[in-house]
Amino acid sequence: MKRLAAAVALFLAASACTNERAESLRAEIEKAKKERVEVATIEKAKAETAAAETALAASRMALEQARADGAKAESERDQLRAALAAEVARNDRLRSEIEAVARRAQEQAAHGQELDASIDRRRARATWVRDQAATFAREIRPGDPDWATARRLDALREFVAGVASEYPDDPVIAELARVQAPAGASLADRARASADEAAKVRDRFAAVYELAPPDVAAGKPQGGATP
Image (cartoon, rainbow, N blue to C red; front, side):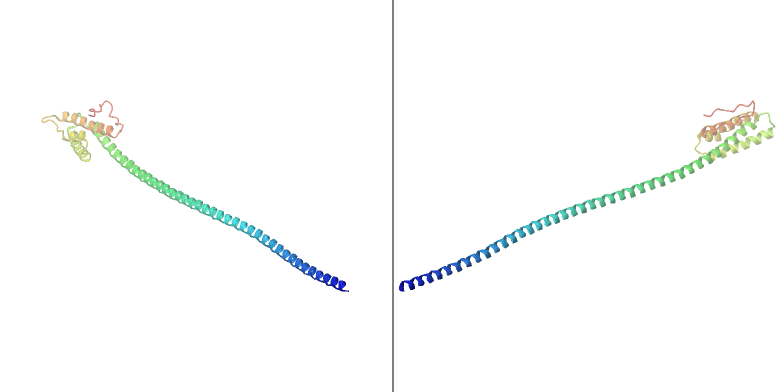
């Protein structure tokens, strides 16, 4: 009996130890499971964090690139604006220069018209002087009556004096206005000299103003040559 009781007691003690060990193992197993879960969670979190950081870095790079592109675009825009402003200023300057040239051309054209009109007036006046001198050269004839010849000589002297006053810078006309008939010269000699004088006035104005000398009466010489 004693042996049986001891055996039972030993079995029970062994069973109790076995149960305690099993409980300990089960606790360790549960702890390991929890730790594995936590490790997996941590690893997943780390992976997600790394992915988030990668995405954040990519976003930052994209943002920096966008900023760089924006700055480049602004720089290009500013350059285009500056180029446009320079082109507008250049066009304005060219327009001003063209308008100035046009104004000068108009002024020169107007001045040219004034000069042409002045030249036409001077040529018309010179033509009148030439024709008057030609008339004197043609009509003063030694064979005419003395009264008619004397009257024409006086008219010629008055005419030459007027022309010399109107054209004071012409030395030929000034000299003709100073010429006096020789003392004691006959009326016929004075008529011939006066006709020659009138012819010189005629030829002088024809040459200076490029006028064709009018025809002289048939059989009459044109008179002295222009100096």
